[in-house]
Amino acid sequence: MNLDALDNNPKWINFRYYGSMLYFPVAFILYNFFPQFASFFIAGAIVSVFLLVSRRLKASSFIDNILNQELGFGRERLFYLETFPDYQFIDIYNFLTKYLTQKKNFSKKPISNSESLNDIINHRFHSELNRNPHESENIPWKIDVDEEVYRRIDNLWILKANYKDKDDINHFTKVIRLRFDKYNDSTYLEVCTMDPNFFDGFIKELKNAIIEESIYKGKVISITSNVVEGIDYGEKNTKVGIQFQKINKIEKDKIVLSDKIQKILEFNIFEYFEYRELLTERLSSMNRGLLFYGPPGTGKSFTCQYLFGRLKDVTIIVASGQSLSQINTICSIGRTLQPSIVLLEDVDLVFSSRETNPYSSSLGDLMNQLDGYTKKEHMLFILTTNHISRVEKAIKDRPGRISQCVFFDLPNLELREKYLKNEIKDNRNPNLNVKDVARKIDGASQAFISELVKLAMQFNLQSNSYNLHSSILLRDQDFDAALELMLRDNNEFSKSILGINQSIL
Image: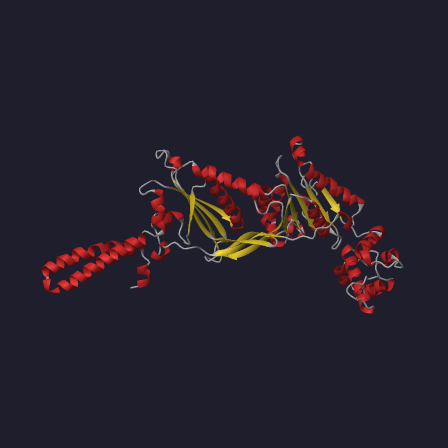
């Protein structure tokens, strides 16, 4: 016989408890038949009374008995369960704390239990040990890039009744439980009440609070996507997560853009969010989708960081790589946290031509999302790609899905000179001929120019004696040495990686 399994059997637990009540009458009967063993029977009776009292005292501290005493025995209870993603745990916890504080008449009970609230209240346990209440694990939760809070993963509150009118079902005690399941990466909200109308209003208020007061609202967040293998038949599930993303705020005077691109950004992004209420009120629909395309290193991602730094009170959702396949979830998050921008990076990796695309279902989801704007939505899409020819035609060529394509080309001589001056900043030697350097790097990308300036500074530092407070004055020979080093290997692949075309010799 498996004693461990027997000890955890609810029927055996109940038998041990109620069976202890039989010890005294059995001892009394045996005493009448075998008086010579009186001392043994008296001792047994004393033990039975002791066990009965101790078990009764212990049972009064069980979490199921505590809850039943609060709810009232013998009443009909209604149980509700709502499942949320793990990243919404803190939003729900914050709402419950605020909600219950306003109600005032509540208490919090320690609990750490794998059973559902329904099983706990109805005394359905796998082990008697689970009936003893104790605090759950306290773990850190991110609430910003560099900020976290500690919260318990299993929380139970009792919203106490107002017994002024005991016949009014709305005044009965309610039990609310918030639990995070680390194994399934899910958040569970459970409610026990005798009011059939309570939960609908409660959950509606909760979801409205998540929209208005989420910890992610107005922040820059990135979407993660992990494939998790199941325990049955090797099935795989995709888990979507949210991470706070730190950006370097770029001032307007620190970024170099062509006048054409600057005007497009001002009109389609900054002015759109400034006048979004008026626009959505007067226009039947407001589709806003921008496609940034051009060679690698031409400033598409850098421009996005500039945009994010300037926008205030707008949620930025960044997705790339495998997470692009979860486009419906990404857009759902964007709509919840609007006004928002959904940035989809390197879309050619997932949303390529449907004839050869293994992610064709995700491609269909994206097209539905781009078509699915409603009048009151304040959400904007930005798609980026280095290879626009690979992007599905139904995205880039169909009017209405993408409102404007923005081409980030290799900079001309004027822009190259601006990039150089912007990168050199206070390290420019009066004798340095910036325009001459710009001519030498015809066909270079912004990324190449940035790396060139860094190498020139390194050559300058290594050939001169500086202290920590000295200014670095770049010279023509520093750029010549840096350029020679970067172009030493003149094969096609090296130039492609560095961000230059074949015009640089």
